[in-house]
Length: 115
Image (cartoon, rainbow, N blue to C red; front, top):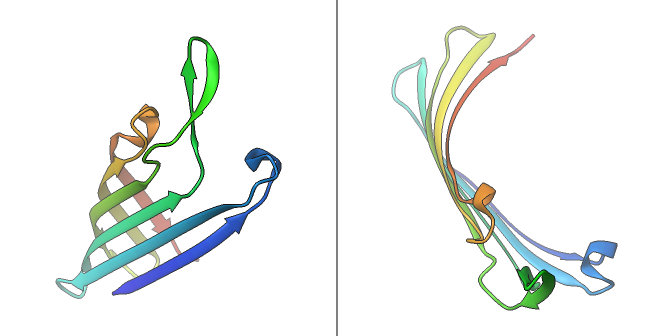
């Protein structure tokens, strides 16, 4: 198991000179089925105390709302040998409703090569 929680405070040109606090967390659990197959489940969560911008009659308007996002991933990681590790994951993204790119499910296939 692995877990992390962070509290950040950002003040950038994007925040228009205001400090915006953020809470970010990550939790992961791994289970080694065999010497060569790992099951991984991970959950990410992020929330900030800023405001959402939305378009009303062609103008960007600040609106208070739920801007928290979470992501759940589950996948398998077989260890083919000590240098190659493919991965297949299914990821469910739940984010701000007005942003479709933050609300889509994904199938990820990766290959890690260690030299």
